[in-house]
Image 1 (cartoon, rainbow, N blue to C red):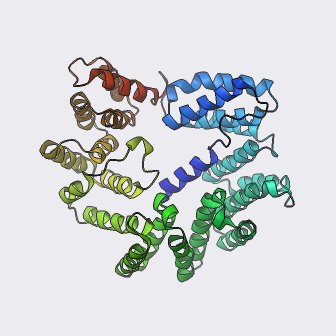
Image 2 (image 1 turned 45 degrees about the horizontal axis):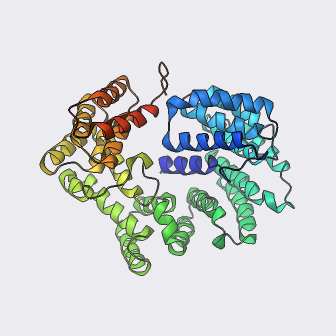
Image 3 (image 1 turned 45 degrees about the vertical axis):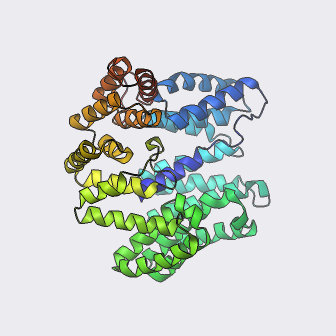
Length: 422
């Protein structure tokens, strides 16, 4: 659950609105922001240091774009494992509290300091930002809600669920004033708010109230919840803790029949069935269920296939060597399948990586080769680098041109030479 929550928040905070548009209208800046977007989406770590230098120079010379430059530098330094450098860049961006990127920088700065246990420091930073955002200015309403939700989350983590609920209420009032049901910009905030409220209510022992908070989103926004696992997983965890999973399944089946086959209820039912196979140790049965699923693994579960990725991660974390062996056995009998490649990449030992290499040499599909090389690169180790470089030159490959391209792209997602990611 925490992995999905962090991923969703990171995605929202680093989304660049109005891509291709800049404050000063300069074509050069357009090009920079397009590069930032492309490098972020493709996780091209090896290209980031050069772009960081360009952004740092522009941040010093262009006051209008300074906060955005510093913010993007912080996000790239974080991806490169340079947390200290990222914090310094966030501080530079935070000097512009009326700018959207200065506000985002403060939110992330508070999150990182809170993760270090510095709750009071994070709260002070957010309350200082709130003072810079007058309530009367409707253009700041989304930023104010984001700050209030973040304050609620920090108070909850600090052990004060009552205070967390108070900030949740403030945020909800502002969202209701703007009719969030018809405003897509509120979608992430609504889900985050519901999760924090639910967890706060659970901390206070109000379990049924928490369930109602989650369930209303599952009913009213089945398509959105099908792509965002936070609400479905919060519900599943609540019913698991209470020992009422059978009753939960029955309610989900009714909702699934009413909502349709590709909505949150059906995805959650499928997740529970797959998770049950893992719990019972029926790994061959799980492979049979997963072999027909073909998502792009570079998305890593962001979207409607989240439940397949989540079960794959659970399997790989619970028993990595057994997961590796059952995948390889299934591939030997039935051939390539995408989530098997994903699991091998998660296990990432020598046998798994060498198996991925041999799969890459044999495959011809551009999509499959991208999946395989992505799985290799996820390990970010010397062996992964060596294998990808060898794949670029392997003349025995079934499709050497496509394989070379896929390996080149995957190499760009590995750390710069001589730098490791912690």
